[in-house]
Length: 188
Ligand code: HEM
Image 1: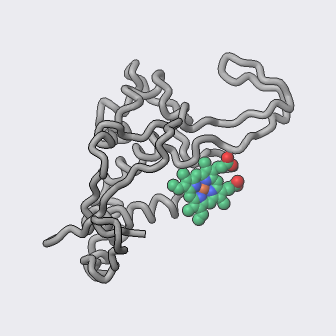
Image 2: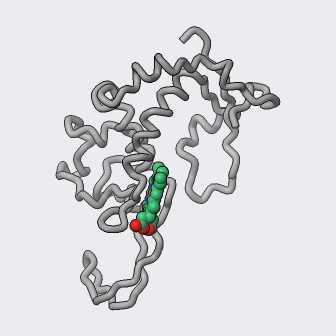
Image 3: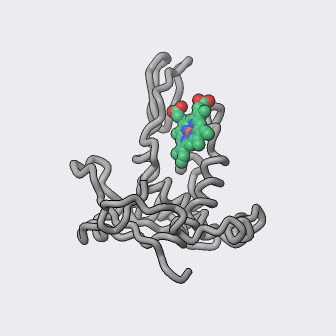
């Protein structure tokens, strides 16, 4: 629920400047592909640095396999830890920094610290292969549509100043609540 700045009253959506006509115009399919390219870089980087699903469900090997430098026996349970995968210092430059340009092929951050092309499986917030998330495209397109509306209509501030320095929240944080204050942006 969206709360007013004093956190007492829900902000009614009618009070926000959500004009369906304006957003249909700004967020047509073509506009999403062409004019919001940087937003997609931001979405990808957000899913890298704070993957909403931290680890895949365990899978059991049906045959003995060589995985990297390991021989993993048949019937062993394995899972992919997306959080650690996305912060692998061999694949990502300055892995704990939020740098959307990592996903821009024109940027030097697109490459590994050794200047090579990243391995395809180094980024996998939706898993991959046969068990890839069925909602991947849907989730990405919803984010592309909803995020511009949220950031154009709402001013978002952390309530506690130190949260500006402590982004993103630590994985094993004891602090469950990161309170934010939302207020409607005037004169958009
Ligand atoms: C940012 C949003 C999302 C993320 C990060 C995400 C991530 C994932 C991941 C990592 C898996 C693999 C889980 C595993 O088997 O270990 C998965 C599976 C799945 N996701 Fe998503 N998901 C998202 C949104 C959605 C949405 C919106 C839908 C449906 C509309 C959806 C439907 C599914 C389904 C049905 C599977 C199971 C696929 C299968 O096992 O064959 N997901 N998702």
